[in-house]
Length: 351
Image (cartoon, rainbow, N blue to C red; front, side, top):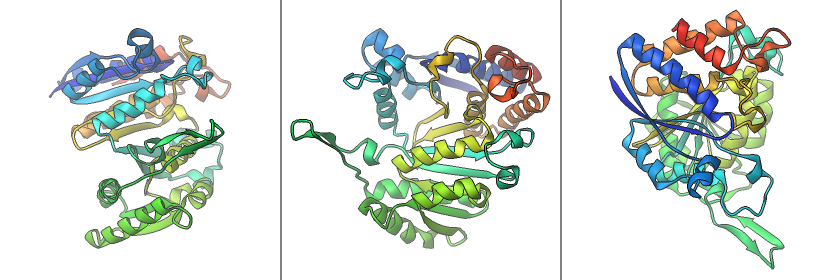
């Protein structure tokens, strides 16, 4: 298969972990007789510095013309520490999601047998955890009207959803549940928020179209608690943008490191694959960042093309590295650790 992939390294450790995902993907392409053309493009603080815009039109054109996007990270301290900055790297991320129509963020959370004791939660609580969040990505409070009034003394952020936005995300949730254990949880705050009541009534109306799926409805605060108590009781969860942003970060530490969890952001025509960790600017250039989340995001990318054996080969290599202790310092637990590049080399070689 010939694949054209947009490569958005971004900021901080983004370029370093992306390099390893490219290395591993090229090894997969060689092993399975594929041809990958990588199309680099600027985004985030790097794009602001170069052209004054965090998601330039030229980058968008490359993304649209590609079969998928492999993305690193966005963010830089000089913007994080300046509340008055009018142009921010994160604006590029929101713009990219909106322009590419990436309305569903797919975030799996699973455990690795060799790392069960590295989780902040007890082994017996997390063993067997294998859940997936589908977070709505282009609506809600992040995209609603926002501003200041009363001379700047009052701030507002409006949360707005349409029924159609809820339906298209829920369809993906139901369809994913049908391929797994046929359990779906709708996460909302319907006892307080009108948008959540719209979510709940919309999903309830869709239940008849998926009679095999067992649907539950839980408030976001209860889910936040139960993710810590019994994460393995969940399978597929759907929720709105803000709730999903918070809950998926909470869930990510179950595995033992945010540097292990991949994700995908998909729409009707485009798909983007990225690690869930941020740009981790403190580690930039130090060759200590864990590349495995980005490598596993590449596995999700191959699987999105229907290339499941390729994805399986990547996952097997990652598990082998973890079992062998060939890991970066975040997983070394005081023992021997290896650099970002060395881990990437090991994975590519073992593939």
